[in-house]
Amino acid sequence: MTEIRRLNRFAFVFTALLLASPTASAQQFVLFDTTFTYTKEDADNSKPSKSHYYVRDKMLNADRPKDWTTPVDYRNGTVHIWLEVLEKPDGGAPTTWTLCYIPNKGQKNGYGCTGTQIYKEKGVYEKDVKMTDFWQNDNIVWEEGIKEMHLVMKDDSGGDGHVHKRKDPEKFLPTKVRIIMIQVAKGAKYDSKLVPNLPEKK
Image (cartoon, rainbow, N blue to C red; front, side, top):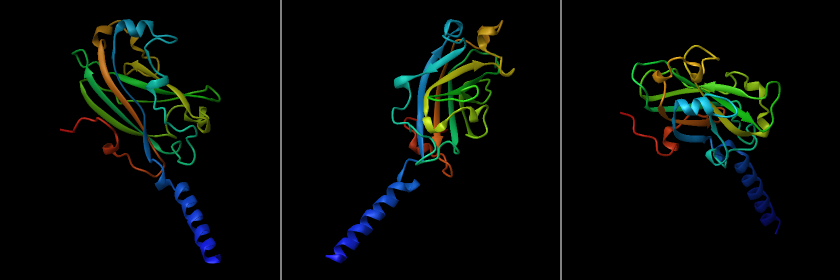
């Protein structure tokens, strides 16, 4: 009887350790995967802010963690940004999307932003960004999670380069893009095979 108890206790401890182990949890997850067409009218009329595209509610992964620090540490990991430019006016105008995390609970200015690469033509653009490197990443209480994302279309002039301010919007709009943000845990490496419906690389 004592031996059975000992074995049961061992099994309980082993199971608890397994569940707590990072290898037992997802090392990456898709925060969102959205494809959309964006027009001059969209840029001029998006609310509450112009040149914004809002990723909210069902557009976000419903299974995203409530706490980004534990049991898996995504806060100190990386984000893999996958951008496919499907349609873009000719002329090669430099374009980018600022990608802003809007938390359930913020501090200081209350949000933080990373961004895509600057691009001039149609195609696929990918980059990895450390979650501790981007603008105002420490303005988010990561233990409380993310409630929505704001995607802001800009030229290459910096923070105020919103496309609705351009005198030549026809160089930027209309456009069609697919943007995916994949959150990768601290110490893990992005694996494209775990992302659904990615086109094969040529």
